[in-house]
Amino acid sequence: MTLRELLKNIDYKCVQGNIDCEVTDLIYDSRKVTDNTVFFCIDGFKTDGHAYANDAAAKGAAAIIASRDINVDGDITVIRVDNTRYALAIMSAVFFGNPGKEAVIIGITGTKGKTSTAFMIKDMLDKSGNKCGIIGTIGAFWDNTKIKTGLTTPESYVIHSLFRKMVDDGCKYIVMEVSSQALKLDRTAGIEFDYGIFTNFSPDHISDGEHASLEEYRECKELLFKQSKVGIFNIDDEVSDKFIRHATCEKIYTYSMKEEADFQAVNVKQWSDGGKLGIEYDVKGLFDGSIKLCIPGKFNVYNSIAALAVAYLAGVDMKIVSKELSNVRVLGRVELVHVSDEFSVIVDYAHNEVSTRSVMETLREYKPNRIICIYGGGGNRARIRRYDMGEVTGEMADLSILTCDNPRDEEISDINNDIKVGLAKHNGQYVEIEDRTDAIEYAIRNAVKGDIILLLGKGHEDYQEIKGVKYHYDEREAIREAAKRVFGN
Image 1 (tube, rainbow, N blue to C red):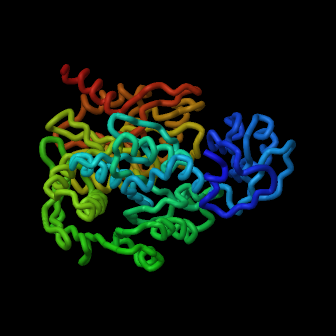
Image 2 (image 1 turned 90 degrees about the vertical axis):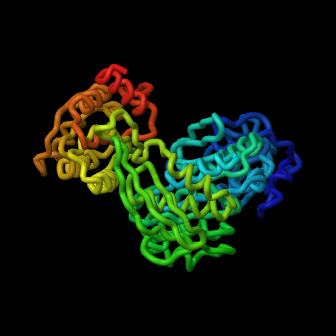
Image 3 (image 1 turned 180 degrees about the vertical axis):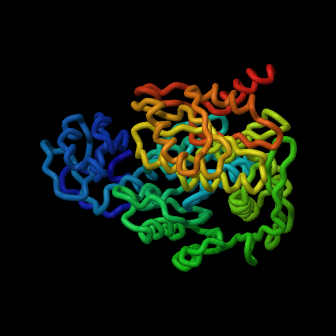
């Protein structure tokens, strides 16, 4: 492909050189530049890509895309644009043959619920014979392929490369979590979303390098609905009216648990049976039916009805929708791992005070005999998070088992000593067992009828990071191993 072809959808100025040069790849990390690639000078949080323009030229780059004047050696082509991140997004789509136009693209934004909603949509579409790929917090998935992306919404070049792989493998739909940072930094620029979903909004990501204010955080999320054909909104959220008012969607649909909407959940009931926990409800509006989920929490009513709305609007057989929602599991999100009919074992990614309090309030609604929490804390991270985790579990759990999470360069005992400071505020009961699988075994061995064992912090992760080394560790495998020790099967 020539540089001229890649530039066809953006405004630019050729400062020097020839735009008919051949291009083999698009690069935004100067260390990866090779002959005939195009290097994008991206302004990062720590480094400025413009400082590496000469390095890229020396390594054989065919062209450099910059947003301000640069001095480079030789006769390399230099292209000036207003925004190099935006240019990367638009040119990446062209480079990979605009794969986003070959599938139905579903974007989900909101403070919470993106991952669960995305996996629910994927499950329903896959089971209806419409192969679906997913890009989000846990990575990229389709068929038997799993790729770690490192970000909830990866860089634009990665997005379009994944789109191309998914489409070439037969994906008719692609669902992706769209973070506020991705929208702010133009990672999704130029993508026309067929459906955009708003889950909810609450304070988060307000810090240096993220968002300067709550208003900016909200405004960035609103951007999804300026590039979505159809908008689907949770009108129970108090700022949903602002999202709807600022949207430019061709059509808007709503969902709710509290008032009339296009998709309304009514008669919501919790259920528990044989160590399993769930929730069920009726739907009325554009679709009338009943849904039973084998995952707990009223928040999953919101997640599932948003997913149901997409499936309905996409023309999926609603019998398949009802069946698949009853079977859906979301990795590391109040994920039930069945080991006994007497008590429940749940894995959740919660690793701060807000998310831990939320999941524990949810589980308390099921009136368990006891909640036993197994958790640790992340090393080389803010210590306040450990105090807060200790405080909320001291208040809401009957027993905490302090163990290993990702201690990184710190000692597990030092991390747990910080947790104890929070536990002490409520005289929280605890034991310490450094090996996490041993800790799980202890909980299972001592659990009685009606208990809930809640494993916090690891969720979907499949490793433990200790002293600079990442060791394989999957919570589900550890639970099965611990149960085998206890029950012998």
